[in-house]
Image 1 (cartoon, rainbow, N blue to C red):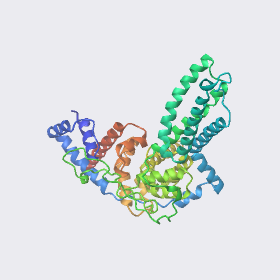
Image 2: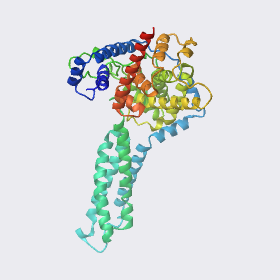
Image 3: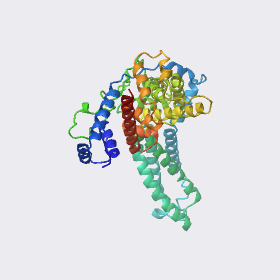
Image 4: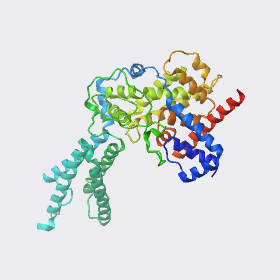
Length: 450
């Protein structure tokens, strides 16, 4: 086994992640390679150093961000945004009501070409019309119910899908034989529309991680004045069988330490991923208080991320720009990933745009600039750690810096970090290992040069 492969596996093991090679192979290489044993000791010490750092707190930007939202956001406009965000459910309800209307019309005497006036008794098709009416009533009522209670949308989508496939097959065959009228074919269009909206509602329902028994639409409890922010710990199961204790996992995580209670809205970074996602979904439905709570719960992670990727002097503006972009797109957020991952992806693009803009001008490109940080005294808590981390990661490539920040300082598991960076999990695993290797090499070079 090559040393770089072994070190990548050891790096993943330090973070409680699953490596791509067998642990027995890594252990065998470790016993025979003194260099990798030394590397592991240094990487473990480096990881403990990251874990012990006090995160630097940025300013509270909630008021500034909320004030930046368009002033013409009246109650009617907020209501219209809520309607747009719920168009799937409204569409399903409308189609269901139209299905019921067709059934009522058939009860009233319209037959849409189903009944033959030249036949009598069982041959007239009256009973088939009654069966069709009963089915339309049932399907329409089910669609309305799914629009009101989205939890039933999956079942409605499954039934509508199977029915639509069978129905369209028969319609095509009968149309070729000339046994169906154009009016009757047109009466089947609502079934297809209902299927589309049922699938959309079902996807919206199943896409997000929603805590049971929570509804952000009606909460009215006053928000706490200050949230406690910190890095998440213990989010992964140790892959080393000898390391069953959560304390042996040095990466940070998101263990849900308490049930999500909307009335309290106590957003702590050790337990809030599901709650933050629910806040984002509520904000997408037009809830302004949920939007404010969402910003308050995530602004510190965003501020730290953009600070380390760019510089402290631009961090406030980049954080505000991140949230403004997120607010503009929040109606399209459906919860298929956590809101924190989604938001950090936006922050990453904001920083990239900022770097490209600055590099297009005749000045030094932004990045890790310890001297610039030392010239500001605005941030006192964790300021020394901010300077130290910035100096440490200054010589890393942008990709390595992102991976290290996301996994070591912000506590994202490799899968979430990969979602933020838009790359495979294996790439994050490799970048973290190479970043550790580069930091250890820098430290060794500093020791040699004094």
